[in-house]
Image (cartoon, rainbow, N blue to C red; front, side):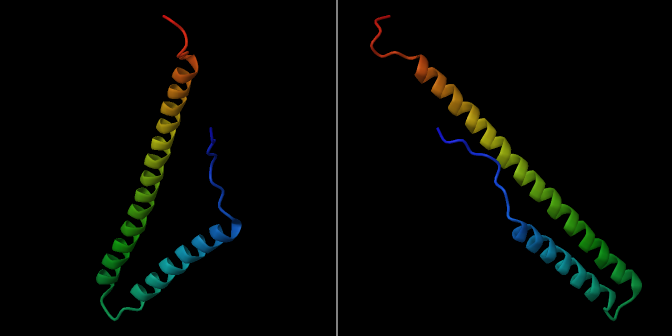
Length: 94
């Protein structure tokens, strides 16, 4: 039986993902601030950006939680099958 432990990401990968996130949000914010439009339009676009970022975090967390729940359920089912198989003796005459 193969035990699947938590996957460890490298430090370089973590730095790269955070840098990409910070860069993308910063550049989008910079673009919104420098738009040649009224402040209420900039505010509207800023709220859209913040809602998009927030919903992205929520979606990522929900997807991760579903994956972990399925993995746990799969491991529990696998343990039940192994227990049943270990208790079964095909040579016994019951």
